[in-house]
Length: 425
Image (tube, rainbow, N blue to C red; front, top):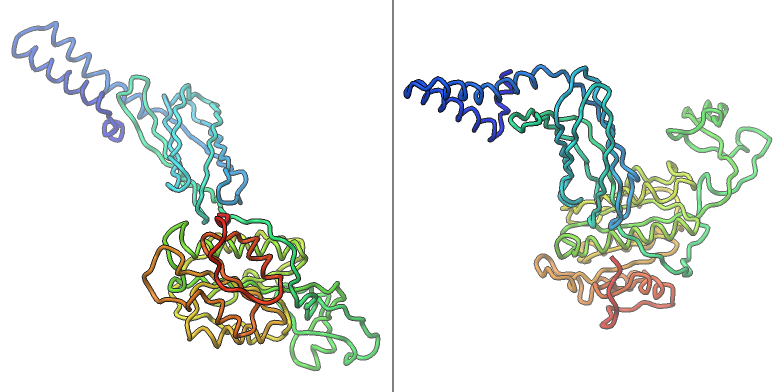
């Protein structure tokens, strides 16, 4: 009852004030009729609050987001299924779902006739031009009486997740070099039937099938060893994205970082469609969730796009090169870079030496609006990359990524262009 009285609306408080005033005036003026009117006006919100407080409603909510993974600019549908398992009516239901402002305005619904066994369905659409992972909910509920005198608030605890991936553009097919550069389990081998020394084995990795354990080799080496199964040789590609804050200019969706992430997403989709097993490396090193041995060919680009959707700017002063110490060389490396400074040159040189073929999309960050922060190399990072043996091309806000990618396939490299059309975003 205390909660219900605290939930009196402006109208309900006005009724209480009017009722008290009428009763006081009736006593002062000696008007019994006015006293009865005052008592009636005062009793209406009090009785309504008592009835609403005694209502036993048990609301249940099921929220479904379809699809849960969308591209920036696409819409997703949110379906709400509400039921009341209580035994008494609950008046009018006022619903408001908590939605991040980048997804649009908060949806509000007014539902009536909430009795026992009551079921209702509602839906709304959300859309974001900004990549990221967003939480939808929780849903706040306000139960009101038909007169609008009392409102009682409740809130669900459950939420749903919507992931918005960067925009991608279709890229043309170009000679990439370093093709069929697989290693390890991806290389076709013929098994020998001789001794343990003739069997091709490797160290056990988490997730390997225990039926592949080669016990003789494990006993000899003292570590768990598994057979290398014969599989089709699959090309591998490393996608490097420079997400350092100091290497980019601009703010929000118009920043060079967002252009770099969009370019990386397009390249990831293109390489996967061409049969490459792609792993993601950022300025802070390799993403463990996209390691080669943890991905299957039929997984697609979902994990890569989800990782790029939540890729934040980092304050690291230089590119991390610790992942270059792994075994295996000769694969394809594609780098999407911002401003390159002198301290980045050794790491870029090691990347190129580590790769069988190196392609780089270098953003000319000085072409973006923000002129603060450390400046990159004149004309972008392209001249520095060419000196280190990369096939490099510069990307400005006015360039189309598919055109830049096409020119990467031609022999030689090029500097920043003065011509161009608007880049796809």
